[in-house]
Image (cartoon, rainbow, N blue to C red):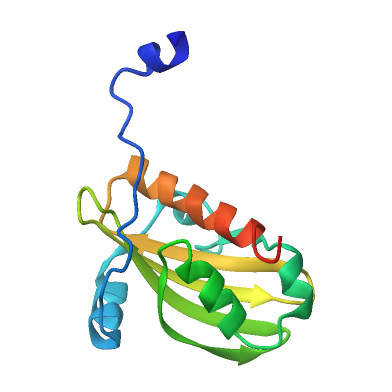
Length: 143
């Protein structure tokens, strides 16, 4: 179609690797050196505020959300907390380029939102695509 043709050098659609591996030590090391993605960088807090689906109302521990994120190719390295604040550290990888994406997700069960920080070695276009994938995954929780 015309819109796609005029886009020209649009990046390929982001495809996440099904089960990337990363140990907690490597996650921490990469977290300390990688920069935040454009959506996070444009925020005063350095994170994005995203809506979470209806499943957030009954969330009493991290595990149901960890399982939900796993279905979207996000592998959790650590999680914990209790309502109203549940925290998850997860990662994903671009199947095509091998770029990594690190996430800190802090869910506020009372407001139904999540404060999400994403760090990556990907270019801005791929990082932006990942931000959209995260937002869609969180919106779909419990639907």
